[in-house]
Image (tube, rainbow, N blue to C red; front, side):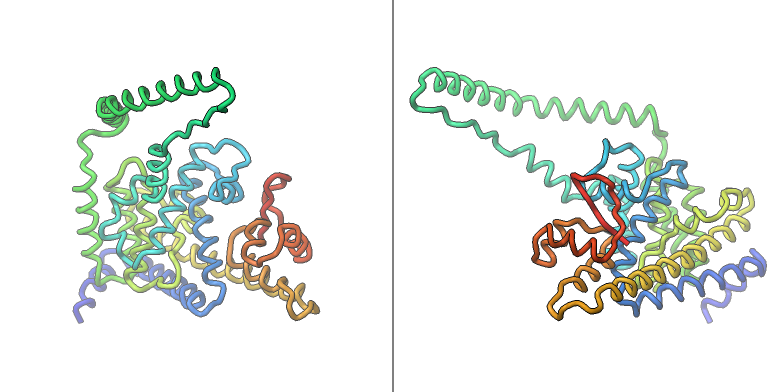
Length: 372
């Protein structure tokens, strides 16, 4: 009975039209989550959903990032120099993966400091390891005294450079910090207290604990846009809202693609001056995202059936069905990936991909990737 009063208050405050939108969004999200919970293609769907939501996040910001470019950038095989928009989309992709890998609600509670950097700690550790790797100097040939002398000079210069670099590290770090703070003061508001605003947003989210999950998610997203706790990466709001739906046990089998649903709606509803209209637009976006997920899952099921038909009539020990499972489970597959997974040669993997009639993503000879 404790949750009846807030629900009646919401009905009196927002009207029956919004509650109808809440019911439709609740039903759509629950239907998608239940289907994915029982589907063998859940992992493949979730892997693809992260890419689609990352591209949709940049689309809402007015930038276009092709899905194929993001896939290749994630594989570190870019066709060209990555743009700023592409790196931002990749930051959204990494954040979604980390949220989906954690327990529901973990990043919603304390994930601001970890996510707002836009970089994985593993990547940072790798960069630090590369910076501290010693530089190997090739040994000179013993039969040439001139080469030996030049090598000794090079070694002495290298040792001196290391000593100077070590003594200048502290001052360079101070100068770098000062430049960072100066640029931040120039571009961003110095009075913008991120931690305080995030704590305020968290308190507002906790106040909706008795409301339906999708209604609470719509309120949380609207409050995030109004408060703007984090100036640089406003896209974090949609990801926190998706984690909110997971923490409220509404989407346990997937991380909802909030940006995909928002992109499907006209911006007039999302940016309307009336809060009631904005909330109904957000709820419609959650419903549209669920419907997109159902259609995407149906596409994967149809693709899996088509691949199974192509695998019929093969010999008993054929690895073609294993390749079909691999293609469905991953957004893209290269010849080397298939060779490692199937324990065959790269040439055999390419022949099997041709037998399955897969769609090529790259269109170039040096690096080729296939998908469905």
